[in-house]
Length: 383
Image (cartoon, rainbow, N blue to C red; front, side, top):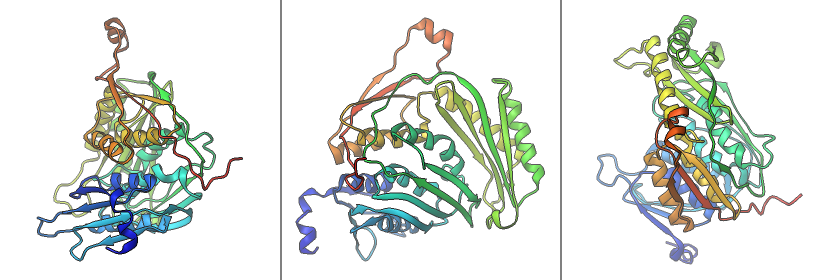
């Protein structure tokens, strides 16, 4: 280790193992604290960082200025000392082993704090069974970020080309305005589901497959709600990526602007088991019903993003009601405590038995609250 790194040695946050790498790198970047992660798959036959993790580190290096990264020869130890967030107009080719959303999660949290408004084009897999799709981020994650940004003009996420696993070939554009601070959020009433929208995508396959998915999904959803509309997006030519496939993303919107997302995607090209369109449609519909039952004011997939944004909000109380915490969110809360010394208050969201029976509020809800650290983007001047 060189002399300059030794001066920050006492501030280094130490971890072992490869789990939750994104959370650790994001929180290191916004806190300014270096992180050292050791024993990364040290006992595996193929030890060290995977290709998609190296690709993520390259992305962080690309969007920052002054970041210092050291990896040992075997790739089992990573030292990451964050630089300053720069932003601007960028382009990044993502690893095909992970979807673009593996990287979008990082950019969503960091987006408001760049020196220059972020305008990045990500190329790779847009839809896979491993990660949430870009459609779910458009439907759910963007809505979460909008609640924390004072003025959300310029915030945009759109699909220019679809790319199914395993070969990808998709292209996504994410734009995020730079802001000096976020705003505290108090959101405890999710409201009632008023409509369901969806997008069925069919890439390099027959257009009839999309219609079959729509019919099977609506067969389930119309039993619960009359306002259901599912759009079909059949891609061909240069916008169809490199691999065939199909899937659907469903979004339920409540009267108070909460969005629940669910999806189902066909097996990758070359798999031994062939996916049936009717099964894909019904699976997505049942997944959406489960998400609505879990409830809360944030989709369960994006609880961790909400927790990070609550942490970075002004020194005021932020409070959000969520459904049962996912294991990923629980670990995120632990990492927030490690980097910022901030502990969330978690308590049951209680209602009367009569109200519970009348409204049918679903699963157990939790009030997640904290006082933000008052993170300020000093690169952004006060208007």
